[in-house]
Picture 1 (tube, rainbow, N blue to C red):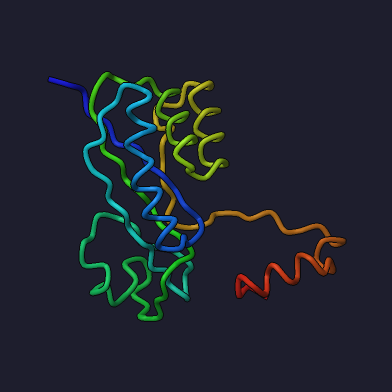
Picture 2 (cartoon, helix red, strand yellow; picture 1 turned 45 degrees about the vertical axis):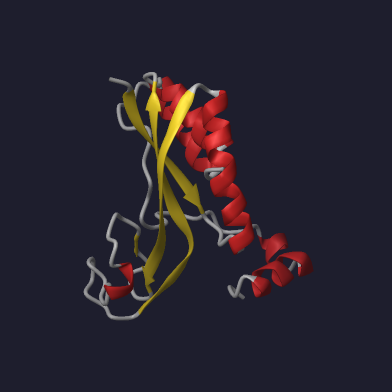
Length: 160
């Protein structure tokens, strides 16, 4: 029986529908190149709590019915900035480094994958995680706060 794996892809952006359609078409081709068989792709949008900042992106198929935060019970929810994609594959057994490399090639968040690679190199057993909220975000340097380009990008993202 072939070995089964799940690739965890973290997108921190919303993609246009036609881009997402193209992504779904290209994933099996990339996996075939690595002698893996594509089985299924599950895509889950996140809902973020406006009070505690945590999001929920699990296998809940009724995410639209998700009415309150499971962490703080707040009812102030909104859709998040991205989604998590779970890609089921079968074939040969993948090493941890191969899993991280494939996730990187499938456009997962590069910071997540570099962190996963460093964890593998240090011998951590749990290298492949999807996080539900930001623990720390380095503040911008003072010269960057006044940058017009940064201000325009932040306005476009609705964060300024």
